[in-house]
Image 1 (cartoon, rainbow, N blue to C red):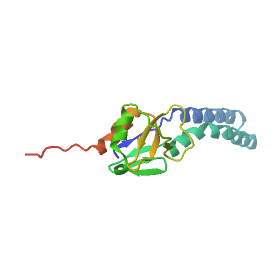
Image 2 (tube, helix red, strand yellow):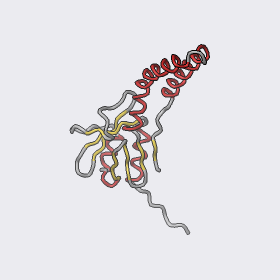
Image 3 (cartoon, rainbow, N blue to C red):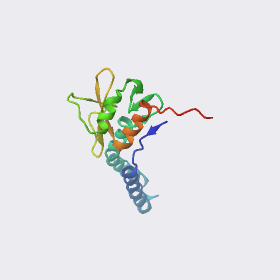
Image 4 (cartoon, rainbow, N blue to C red):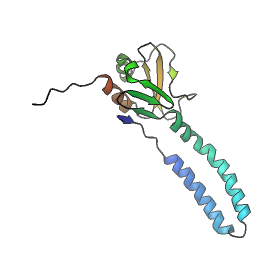
Length: 155
């Protein structure tokens, strides 16, 4: 793997920690006498926890970026690096925006808050938007396989 964009887990950890502390506190107060009530309330609080974890799970599914020697993978979508136009990567690094309406890669509906976008083009002329957490690192990793460096032979 050449590049993998790690997703922050702070929000998920805080939400799960608060949930576990809350049901643990309730358990100390009520167990073993009111096990059914404790289990029911824990389930209700779990219904409150799930929406808090929906965005991080969605980011993990739809906006996970991996670049290896031959493929760019964004979420559930794969694109061979040979299909990417190197000029569009240079233009994205300079901050130029295309006039066309780009399609969002990965399968999501939109770009989540806190993420930046990079617009690249394929050799067929299709413009694609990639949601990224670190624009500079992503563009650097994307441009490295497109412009391989040839080293002189070892003597």
